[in-house]
Image 1 (cartoon, rainbow, N blue to C red):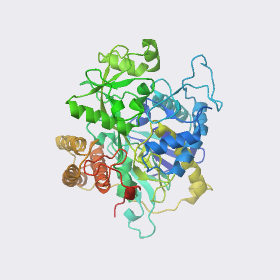
Image 2: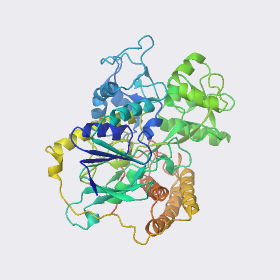
Image 3: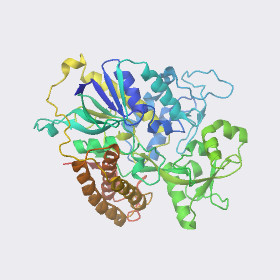
Image 4: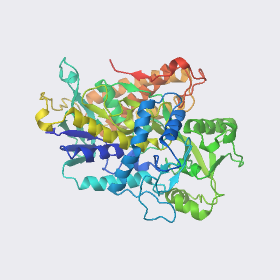
Length: 539
């Protein structure tokens, strides 16, 4: 057993931001199942939304967020995150994050009125998206990792995957439940180690890999969410899975995102004949919120039988396109698509979970000692549909507030406050090595396909019920593997994927209305009586 003052699970913007601040007060372990620079954050292209211009205001940003959230945003939380954003942006810049400056101001510094270049994305009434070309997340992660590597009190466990949280109830105690630590698998050795801490922070990102087509990297398997559920924490709003409208459609491209900022800079959506169609669905056209644009593309594809639609920015100067979107332009060119001359074939793909482990704005969950920040958490900011580029903002603000909250809760020397309970070491018992990986891969594929077919952009009760039935059967099979064989990363991710898929389906079945990202043909209109979060808790 290894003891730390803080254990952070995940190494994206939320986890690393928190770790850097917590390290000033204690020893911090950062558990990450790949290398420390691999996270959902790295793949964020568009930018981070924040009020930094005199032409903008907090009130406008709040209004835009509430509008996109379709009546389910927590307004108090929204105001806190929006108004505290500028201070966190300044901290990122002080860490070395290089946001793009306005042309002619290469050495500009943020001063409250902002000399930074700002772009606009769907649902925003003003230009307020700070960016670093089209690799904003990668630039933020670079700066955070560089700062982390200089800090002696941060201990990074790369290629380690968290297995399960250790709680009082799992140890057999009848008192108030709380988190005490976490079991972690060393992928290289196959050894499960025990990390002891009264302060566990989940920052594991989202669950995009639960769907067949996603913009997320392979690591996005909902691990933190599934662990929190098994530990008894409340889960909220998991029916609201955001599908990004524009993922590159190419047989060799995998899951490459075409940033919403491309539309923010004037790109239009057209069908195979070159006809624009978004104006038929929303007066805001291509800059409508993501749920509306994704459903419009889905409807056009079903209406015409097309396998994709097209994003056209060829009317912009080639030099501007290549300078503003160098990563997108070079990636598309590698597949034979010159975006300065050709339309980009695109389709919607699973992108972001707006629900998650229910928390307050400080990251506190319903389980004492367990906090969650970033995409894994549901603070109430995103409601039924996340406003573009609000995710990085939420992550960095809640990471700061989480650190402050833990310092208030534990104001003295951390080691002296530890409540000592005897933790059990991990025991594999008679578990055998798993020699039929084909079963793992088959179940993985089946979950992702049924979620895409039955729990996608447009849903029905019958499809959801079919998904629920099959997921129950799959869960029994996976649990048998889990208890009878030695655990591997593949088996743990499969177990977590099945759990998360079931949470999405169960939440969707509860919401008998259409709102935001949850659209069902059986209940096509919103209901005033359902203007509240969907809550799930394991009994």
